[in-house]
Image (tube, rainbow, N blue to C red; front, side, top):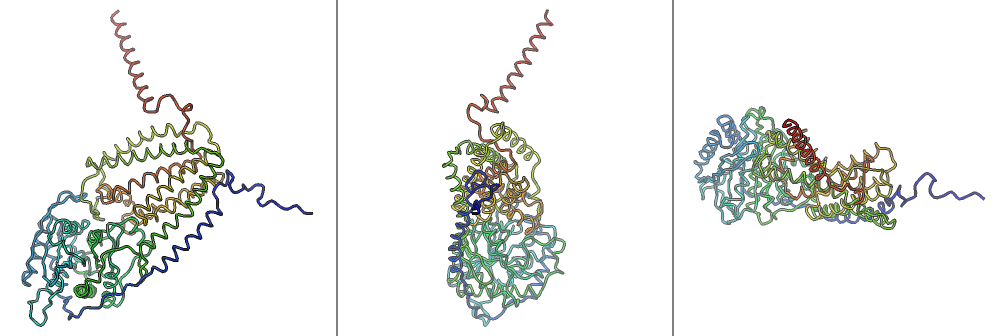
Length: 626
């Protein structure tokens, strides 16, 4: 009778052994639970209906707007905030509105721009009173970076703002008069090219900020590119779905096709790491429905090519007419625009943000189940995790020390100062880092690492049980980190999930080739690479992308909680990378540690050396006296 072969080949480790401790069957089975949130997300898909078009005659004169944009870009090409050209551009705006009887008020303010310094700016406001005190803001920034004419960005938007103000300034009672149902604020901002400084000033200090329920921002609307709608904020929120679909419908009517839309991945990145250089962002973060109509890209066009000769009159008329109809629509049905929310839009349909968050949280379940099972296996084998957790603690302390140094240098002004708004993408703010501060940070970080590594150096080969404890401790700490991310911004799980699911299998690859382990460790960095890749390619920053992201934190645009979450992730990555490289050592027991700590040993050596030199000097002096 033939012998029954064993269920596993003799050279293949059994599941649950030290060589294959991760329960693959449990991991695969838990993926079935992800199907339920996906089903819920499918049923959460909605298709908001656009508001009906307004009942008003077309009055947007594209030819007049093109002439205004040419005039502003040609005669006031340098509109750098605080410059003489900026003051002349403000006088130009007042002059163009004067014939229409709209009183223009000025809001002067001062702010510090990262990489530039202190600037004096001014917002200009003109108000068309309506029957309701609720306000609709139509805005455009009139400044530029001073290196080009800024014809499209943003003389085109400023000229369109003047034309829309003219439409609502026709004397009441005439056949073409427009009596708005809501109060309309025409806002010409300053500092828009530097991260929406004027928009933030309006939200914080303008008396007209109260009662604002919708915002239409016009920015670079005369380019040859396909119209776009920007709806992102500084927080994981997006504009009203009704406002989005209404704006898209008006653009489709005028341009013959709907606006371009970012991919689902780009939308998830924007929710996980909120960032927008357009001026709708501060309003959305305050819960106000806002959209930006533009033909520009994520990065401003090269300054040398943004000339009046390149303005597209046809596109200017299309977006201008769409903006006028959108304004009329909101004036008629503003009560149907419901603030802000979070969602992913695919075509003309929306997937609710809470459903997307539910799916992302469900994707944690296979990792959590396998990590907890791994902990249970260690408990059954009586493998102590305390030394591994202490090793993780040492790495955590080192990265916390580096982060604290970075924050301290920021408080001391070594990284420069600036308002918490995104620096201009074409500026040197990302590259303008002081060499002294970087050197000091590097030196102090090196000292901190020399102190921390004293307890992390391998003094002997780690046993299989100790390596399993090292993996388990790091994975459990990453699991706790994932729960903290869920409590702060569940969309940010997009950046954490690749490392969790890749690094979970490192305990099973302990005997695998080193290149394979290195590849798995590298795969865990795919999440953070999404952020830096977005800034590098989408915003055209290239290798300056990491520096720009650090600058966002230095000026406090990125909240401090992000630093708190990154530190434990770096500690876990360091421990797992050390294990993969075969350089891991558990935290030594008390009897295995030197009597003095590393810092005290250095001090002791210095003291003994000083005493030795002093004794030698005294001996030499006595010899001379004899």
